[in-house]
Length: 267
Figure 1 (cartoon, rainbow, N blue to C red):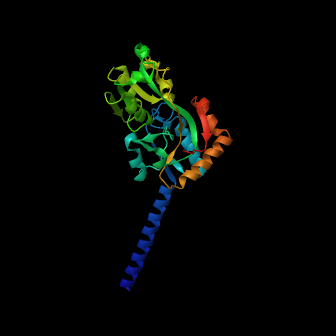
Figure 2 (cartoon, rainbow, N blue to C red):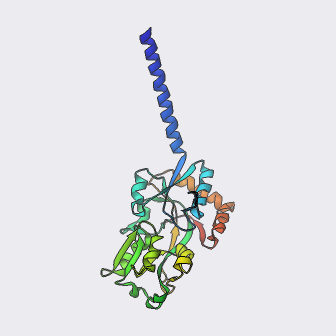
Figure 3 (spheres, rainbow, N blue to C red):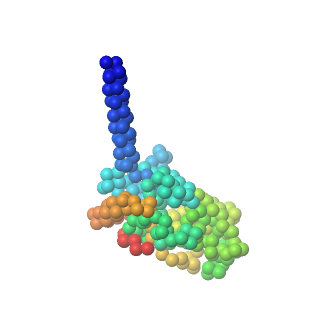
């Protein structure tokens, strides 16, 4: 009898363990982990540690529609593909330029992209006192450029400064401003959306965008692991938010309404 009772208890415990394991797995499936870096007015944390900004609010709005809790995971931008493919994050949602490449490989070959949602471009940032020295791309050759490692800006700067130039890489774009301000780098190549919110203000009043050098248009999109079923779900949510005006409302909150542009990504 004792043996029978023991077997029954063992079976019950096993069933409970399997149920608990299944439950835990389901909870994980209901969480969307977004890989981000800190970008002013896009993804940043307030004094209480809460994530705020256009993309943070955008992600939460999408999460509500697809029935997933959104969490933000700060990443080193140079490790974004490793983080994604290892499963540590579910997507790269952080001013991610879709029509760009990394080390010569088109990003569309590395991830599945959502619809694009914002127009951007790279820009050159220098000290105001040096603006007259930068009129054409030829003026960038041989210079020291501060960039975010693994970014579209880094890809451009590598070619622009040439073999005699130098690239100084940082985990996030924000650090490049101080690099130029202190004179450790001649220039920075960064997203113009960020540069417009920082240059000429506060601690960086002495920095400016080089208006004479205009770089090609870029489009932000969300990157998912190849073959992920999240891409289609998020695209449907983006379409809904665009049609019901919610996405425009979020963009206006952070003054991005003029660069909001939703379109299917065709590579």
